Length: 133
Image 1 (cartoon, helix red, strand yellow):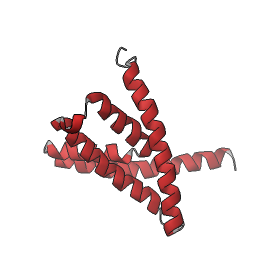
Image 2 (cartoon, one colour):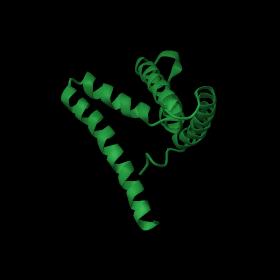
Image 3 (cartoon, rainbow, N blue to C red):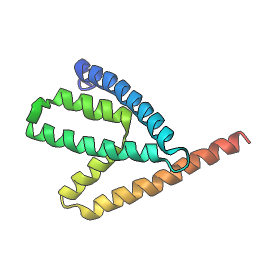
Image 4 (cartoon, rainbow, N blue to C red):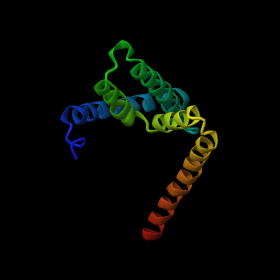
């Protein structure tokens, strides 16, 4: 329970999440304006840049370089990147599993997340359409 009441961490996540969400909206507007509708280039760009940034922040926090303290890491990873994209966390989870030599588990996690996520999103659409024809 005490971890939930870590007010500096909660404030960092709150502020970072707002910043990440605004960044996501801005990137979506710019990329969609540049490339137009159709293929989800904005989401693709957000997922890839978020994955790059989480890798940078993770390594900087592991090496304690540039003053990336645990609170800064929470602000950037859970807050900013959490608001920007959760795909970055998914990517880091896969890298972590692979770095632990759990390659099969990493592939299962990746494929399972994508396939089951797709099915779950479709099931949600079907459920709403069934309730509101």
